[in-house]
Amino acid sequence: MSFDPLKIRKDFPILDQKVNGKSLVYLDNAATSQRPVQVVERMNEFSLITNGNIHRATHTFANKTTEAFEQAREIIRSYLNATESAEVIFTSGTTESINLVAHSFGDAFIHEGDEVIVTEMEHHANIVPWQMMCERKGAKLKVIPFNEKGELSIDTLDSLITGKTKIIAVTHVSNVLGTVNPVATIIEKAHLKNIPVLIDGAQGAPHFQIDVQTLDCDFYAFSGHKLYGPTGSGVLYGKRKWLDQMPPFLGGGEMIDRVTFGKTTFNEIPYKFEAGTPNYVGAIGLAAAISYLESLDHTLVLKHEQNLLQFASEKLKTINGLTIYGEANEKAGVLSFNIEGIHPFDLGTLLDQLGIAVRTGRLCADPIMDHFEVENMVRSSFAFYNTMEEVEVFYQALIRLKAMF
Image (cartoon, rainbow, N blue to C red; front, side):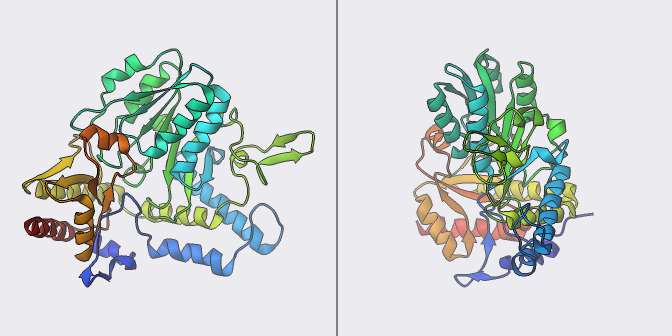
């Protein structure tokens, strides 16, 4: 049995169009994936037919929307295999999820002189919040380096961990290098010293089935818009033992128990971390995206994505002057590169004229750019709806554009 991306593409009508007179080849999935019609229809149902604010009223619209919102939480709990739905917090995305932990966990557990460990290959969203927290608390940020293949130097972790290490935050999959990090090993090492671990799953969740109990991670964050769902939606999974001890991140409605001018008491989890009216339509859409993914054969999907990556890697390596950044043994869905003599912005613009969408720039990962001593890169990233034919079109376009220069 094989995976048929052409059949799947019927659920993604946005892909069946021309850009600049050329058939669209969408290879910017690590930035934002496209949504199937099933997700759009589910969101439209609540935008056009049944729209009422959740948890706050007894009328029919409010009740139906509240039920769908909490059902979405349960769908995500099941997908992640979290112990209970209270461990699933809705956020606007990975960035807010990480900021929530950095702020609230930092307030509860990190003091002057303590240490936080991240990696050299983190997205800015898993660096800057920790830097801000460290500056606020007088703590120190330490970094696990990576080698020239784009693999973490895990052997340095034991020496980086000290009695002052309070948390380790690491990306599951690098958004630039495509490296699949050995997060299970990192978690195991950290837990031997009773150190919690946050996983940035923005690039991991779109490619792998996540079981937070098997991983035994303390926090896992991901975004809806990279998981075939809506923008402005995301999830923070957290173990109850940590969430119960962490103070709220934002103040306002819903996150309270009782408010007086003398004192405010707070709601239970997850509502303690969901201040104000949430993006409930987005949460419902995210759950619809996850239900869509669960309708597919994940083994076949993953194999197809790996075949795309392997085929693209083999093709690009035949182009003289093209350098691929990140040659880890375990990779997922991302190829970042430069072609000698062609500025990445020029290449991205010309590819767009040929109907091919890629990402160019520093990819929200300045330390990776500094590691390889480059200013910018071109990134192609693949999803299960991409085809081998599209990879061939991409390859031929690069050959053509290289000849122009």
